[in-house]
Length: 131
Image 1 (cartoon, rainbow, N blue to C red):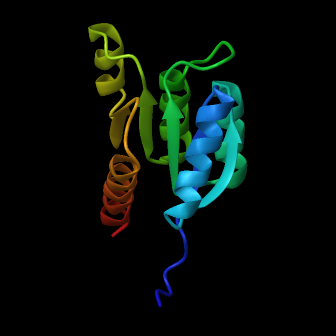
Image 2: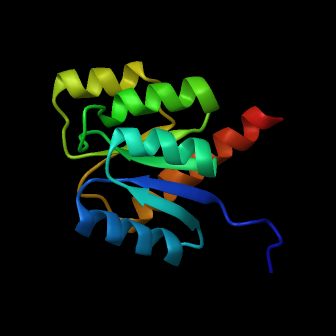
């Protein structure tokens, strides 16, 4: 039995059905979901309060701040890794995503295995950087 603590993940997704499915998938994979929020503003607040190990961030969100702008603020202030979740693969969105230096990106719809692999890769990078 592993003694390593569960990775703590914040889910930022504005579609409730998708957010609920993500939370359930993450819990089934053995992760601790510390919260689910639907706006960039709430993501910034929750990241500062909960300090998760990783954030899964939708690009298009409710509110004035999109996922990319929220990620830039969170990474500048807290250096928490972010994996984007998006259904938008247009050139402008992809460029903004890449310019923000994410730890990964999953294009919707994705499989549970893809989610697990992206989360594990981002957490491995975080552990490597912490050394």
